[in-house]
Image (tube, rainbow, N blue to C red; front, side, top):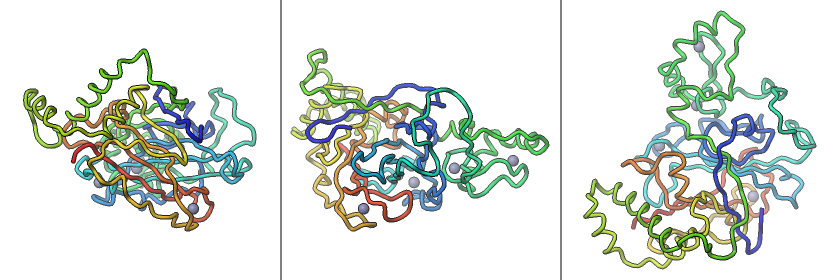
Length: 355
Ligand SMILES: [Zn+2]
Ligand SMILES: [Zn+2]
Ligand SMILES: [Zn+2]
Ligand SMILES: [Zn+2]
């Protein structure tokens, strides 16, 4: 990952699920989380929405080691979000959670040398805590009939029963068959986001000559305004046009869209120790004081931001009352400390384009 004045950009590519296994230390979006520390997983009771108390759903993870810190030879930051659009409020990140996890090169889970990219099933997960069959969070409870499927919560157990476990449960009771935890179940499909690999590469230093910046800016502006209008009410095309014209000029947004036009499909900007690219100058929340790390009391710094383009790839954000964001800005402990639990909570700020 680049540091200093170079920014890294994340793009999405389809990839076979087996290549997104924890042993390959993936950066990815959607599906189930590829946990790093496989034993001291977060308690699902703590991975619930602050607003509605539902279990949070995995959104994405960024593999971002600190090369200079031996305890963070492997390091991944995980984002979770509540699936209920009504919990997702303007400029508020109550329905999101960020967790940071890190391991030294020599650890209890993974080999010292990188794994070969071949499809084998030589990585037994039986030694580690069971995961929820639906969402991949820790699953402390199990189906009392077959005792083979595990769940993070009663909510997901009920969902799984309705979406097909009712049919397969009798079979599981009479055979040695074990459900494969990496397969996304029907219940999972109704809840989890589409899975993608997140590829990280350097941003172009110049504005692109192949892309019409003005056109890309218009496209982005239109997308953001449609979403904004959609969350207000159902407006006609004419009204939307009118609304767009009366928007006061937003210099921050202009700068944002001009920079984004270099790579229109970017879903991530990674710039540890740098500055976020805010989406608007009108929201006020770019001035927030980020609290110090609650584990080591040291400073936090900007690490990366998730872009609104991600909404298009995971199929949300267009319909009224779905989850939505302008940018999701993540701050983490500057020294990437080792204190606290294996999965340490960090800070996320949500900035929306709406005023
Ligand atoms: Zn919620
Ligand atoms: Zn679950
Ligand atoms: Zn069962
Ligand atoms: Zn710290």
